[in-house]
Image (cartoon, one colour):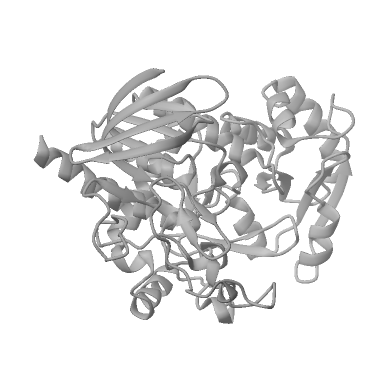
Length: 425
């Protein structure tokens, strides 16, 4: 058993967990983080604040902050109702500044949502996009001559499907299927990205693409243009092809998950965070002055003493909530979960209900400082805070609010937690 001590234990390795570990370390707190594969590994890399509101009307938003203000006024239970705009923007700025320093820059549209093409041929609104993807919004808006490049053997991305769908309103959009130089059989974005670390491979790729360009001013590729060197790979491809190059997310497993994981693994280590990768918190014992955790996995086990903790385990996918026949409970501390009393009301009879399912809004109840609550409405522990999808009152998937909500609530939780620890000495 390996003994560890820290100021803050972060439970979870998704966007909220990574953000909480980052923010706590930046405030000079010692941090231990434990968690298994989470939403960050399957994400597109987009940073959504709010893309759809009201959800029942599927109304897509160009002005996310107007939507957030409306949502706050309509639902006091939503996590955004406990945040102001600065909580969200300050958190996102700190989050993206960190990622930029690791080689993953982001771009936005002066407070408005970008509208970007997806591999399915639909469009998506998001607040910030990776800099390698953002030019796709300009190409789409201008309906500029554009070539979509897809590859033999790469699943989860079809240039033909994209052009057939978007091409109805974008006549200058074309696609081509080519062979990726030097790789045979089934292709994976991570392998392609690693291959493009070699400038010679980029030149070979450009030579294969160039005959298909025609009058194109843009070339869209599936997201595979490098890992943490994606800015350099994209710049080099633009130089070789003489057009603006942008990426389009692929279906999971996406390269952006690999990029984000690599950025956080490297960057958090540099800030002194002790990361227990692929380790699960198995027991948690609160005490008046903090917590005692036991975490482990296939090999080592750890006993961690922490003065405070952030719960960021997500819901069902992250195994933050366990569903039983007649109840739902949070898995680490056995906290109560807000959900309809009758299990028959947890899910709508229509699987693809436009309103979603009540279970999609379940989670732990929390106070203004994002401390989880007991059944009687009192905080479970004065130094336990929660962030991200584990919180009740939101449907981040349908709202398109996932990363903004995760980062904003982590920012507020860590600010409050840091103040509490500072006052305690």
